[in-house]
Amino acid sequence: MEAMTGFLAIVLICDDEPSLRELIRVSLDGPYEFVEADDGEKSLEIARRLRPDIVILDLMMPRRSGLEVLTEIRRDERLSDMAVIVLTAAQPATREEALRQGADVVMVKPFEPDEITAAVEEVLAERV
Image (cartoon, rainbow, N blue to C red; front, side, top):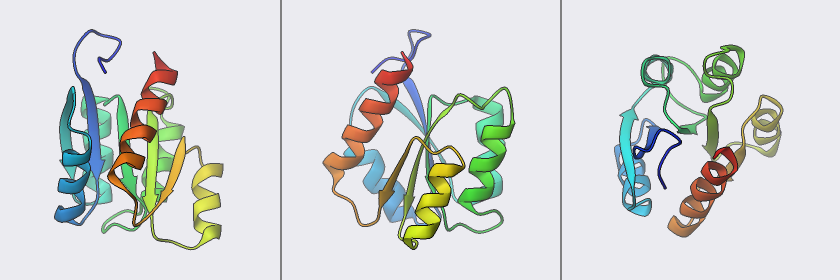
């Protein structure tokens, strides 16, 4: 899917597990440009600098939690409309908090590759 600018959609993958970042990249084999962050602080820095079309965000990361990153994204007027998919193995209460903080979709780990693909396509389609 092309972003509204006519270029490939930029997907920021934020997870401290390299194997999960790779699984997401392989699952989303399509017209995307991938950028990765392995901690919450880097995730927020990259989001502010690149303004990706979508952020795939793990909740449990070093330096800043995914919930903190999500909260900052929603508070920043330049980023507040950014699509965010949260991935987590956390308890239901934490998943509910992610939705309250503005996550577009919350997915439970482990997930099937086609589930992440469908979620990304759906969220991006809603923003075009």
